[in-house]
Amino acid sequence: VSQAGLPNYRCSPTILWIKDADQTILIDTDDGASWSMTGAEAVIWDLFTLSHTADRVAAVLRLLLGHTSEEAWRTLRAVIQVWEQAGILRPTVGDRYG
Amino acid sequence: MDNIFVLPVLQQYLVYAPLHDFGALVDHRVVQRIHDGLLGLGVTGAGEVSKLVHFLRSGAMPAPVPKSGELAPAFLGLIPTRDCNLSCEYCGFVSAADANGAMDLALARDAVDWYLGLVCRSGAQSAEVHFFGGEPFCAPGVVEFAVHFARLRAASRDCSVRFEVATNGVFDEDRCRWVADSLDSVILSLDGPPDIQDQLRHHKDGRGTSETVSRSARILSQGPAKLSIRVCVIAETVESMPEIAAWLCREFRPVSICFEPLQPSQWSQAAGLRPPDPWAFSLRFIQAADILDAHGAEPVYAAADVRARRVTFCPVGQDVTIVSPDGSVGACYLLERDWAARGMDLRLGKVAGGSMSLDPEAVAAARGLNVWNRRQCARCFCKWHCAGGCHVNHLPSSAPGDYDRLCIQTRLIALRHILKAMQRDDLISSLLLSPKALERAALQASDGIIDMGREP
Image 1: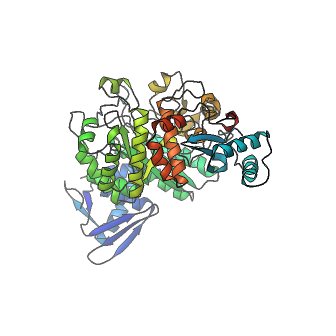
Image 2 (image 1 turned 30 degrees about the vertical axis):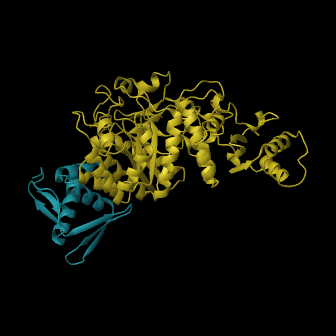
Image 3 (image 1 turned 135 degrees about the horizontal axis):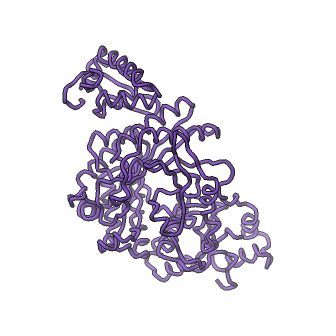
């Protein structure tokens, strides 16, 4: 659990993703749903796929975006909420990402 | 005239004019007529020789010149850490005293921000960031951060950025997939099949690395990043170069394989390792090159790149700024102790307090390190390709024609590449069978047509 009370996350095992210089595209192999991510969203996804904790992701976001710690956490929480609802990210405890 | 060269190739002569992008094989009478025509010593008359003389007098592209004016780095170099997870037999590149931890993320951000600002102000729309070490992935967070930050910043400035890393490939599968998916070019050090790799490139506790590095090379072969494999060749492995090339092409999908001879050091000497004989290296390189060509992988000996027209071989003199973990900025990625031992000062400035400060005199001095100032290269047909080689480690005699082992290798391999481009594989094969002809071509004191005698 992170300092801000968030658990760690892993991506759903049914999600495949592909990256190019401009975007990251996610596809749910169960239902064919897809998402395109750019900017900070793509960075957050990338960091979660590397098994980074929410604390680490927030710290990187703060430096990347020139945010305060509070702003970085706000950004991260908002993104996580959307992804959790979409089923592409799942909380995990002590597990690696899928 | 200074950039038109003649090399003996068996019974013929190669007239080579790199600034005309021209090569021709002619007999001794024709080369004499070209020489006389260029010097105005004789009447060339009408016909092909006359046309050729006219072309050689007038058709050259401008000679490459050193950088001048505003700073325009060919790329930004970042050294995330000087640490390394291996203890290769020949490498003393980084000792514990030189390794000073990882680069601070804020420092990486400031360096990238400064560089992209410079690129965009110049009107360029593409940028390049290269990662050097130690082993860059001993500080993976720095590489990740720099890639993400550069991409975000570049996108906001309507600019693209590409990334290259030089790595030993000893990392886990997740990291390797990230590298394959996120970077554009990976230079992987892999010296050959397991018996060679494990002997030369091992962990600090002596465990071999072949299994891990082979796995990395397979993953990298499947990803979008271009995989180039760098092979360090020693005296004991030089005869195996063709087999190494075949094995690498069988196992992996590299776009290129770069063979580099061992750079002798106190560490390689302590390990009893010697650089390969230059003649053996050249011959085996040429044999290996045929194997690589057949597999669609480019054979590379960096100094013998005949497509290049340049005044300097390496980042030095190209305005490249290489940022160390402590914030110091240099023109070269080698350790300060290495160039300082040669009496050189390649420091350019420092990143501190959120900004980059460079010493204009130091930048000018780095720009002065170029082939125009290497007298011994003036009459060598490779001058615009190798540009004198490494400024720190290649210190040949100052006398023209007094070639050292690196010169010999460069000259023979460049000659191979030129003949290959002319589709004269038959001549390459014949040359390989004639040590005397090879020596004649490689050891010719001056290649300048201007120096050619009446009876070449």
